[in-house]
Length: 256
Length: 294
Image (cartoon, rainbow over all chains, first blue to last red; front, side, top):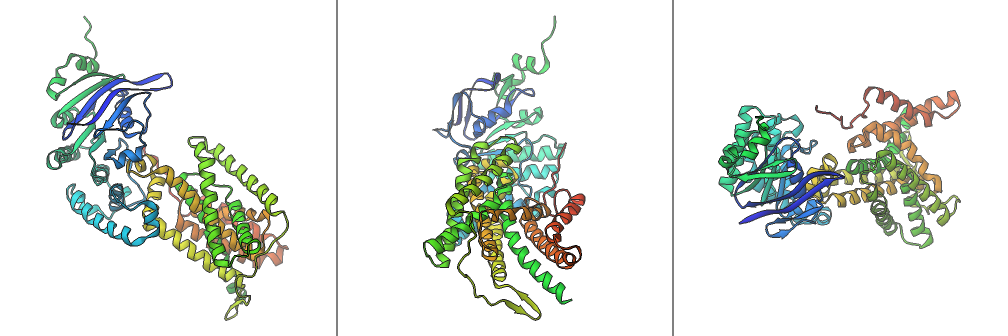
């Protein structure tokens, strides 16, 4: 079953075409990776899916609902979560507060209710905290750091906290923009394992952008390759590695 | 010794009111990164609203007070929805000019509606001054301080614990991430303007009750500016401490130096302290240090 579908997506900034006629489907429970050289349009696709860029053309469907015109916060509430290339944690807050914010998207009490009636909002908050502790903090092994301000953490841990915050939203689809960029070998291995666990233990669906080819080939179910805003290939890691267009895009053409 | 104690106490009382008005700046800046130069005029409108409800329609103090808060919230909301929302993404200097223009418009409107004459609230509090030992505090100032502190505490609690407060802090930190968490950032902007306007309007009511109301009441906003910069534009705690520092400096410097130099020190002293502190801490006492990662 397709949980996310992108059809004929085109995006341009002024005269510059960032994406041209991109179509792909993401199946529930798979790791779908998007790769391509720098400037190929990978992050632009995530920003279109997230609702930050308005594509000139195309349709985006999340869990069967057309979300092309939906605002980013509504899409988040519908089950779309995201981690960022440059860590986008709320720096003034603790790890736990950051994670709880992710879970707030699921709370039923409205903003105004939360302002006016402390009672029901409070009860819901406590239930949420327990839930988050078990569900996310234990899973990502960040128990010892949960009371620390995020600014004080090492880079790899900050990335993990960002993932925790996204998971607390219980997303239907998790978009990850370069989760292992800038990490050392050990941190990379940890992160790759967590991403795989999200799929295998929790049945999560992940759309992944990454430059680390070892990670991509290890954990992806399917890979889509972009070059200059065009889709040039899609398939299993095995197929992609031997695809002539992909080899050309990455290594350049052989001159005879 | 007596005079120092007296000056300190008056300084703290005035400082508490400054802190509340400074919050008007800080709440809006924190969420939207806009310095609202019309904060003084929001104060002035707040004072006139209370005057209208109490003197012109004859409401008792407490309902009138609540209506002032509702009116201020509405004013903040209108300003954000009708004007500033359309300025999103424009250069900071344009947005600053818009808020300065807004302050002139509000002042002009006030002159049109309420005329330029000096007005007073009916007495709100018992007239007898509060006397502790040798120290005397004017009743209006004392009660103004009490109300201001109560409001500051409520605002601080909202920011720290209420879901909206957390959402506002998140928005201040990173708008794109806030959006991705399902926070309706546009509503948060509106809410910040409403809360900021309420803080300013309450401050205006207190100042108006102490010194009377006229369309230029908002000029005191200029005195509050050192408070805000001193504390750090985005720090609630900083606004409170900045308020006390400016209140105390103003009164102590004025009390000791005015008789020697013949007046005017009260108005200058906060700015001298401001310049000194900014020399050493350019982002204010408690402001966020912007760290650029390369």
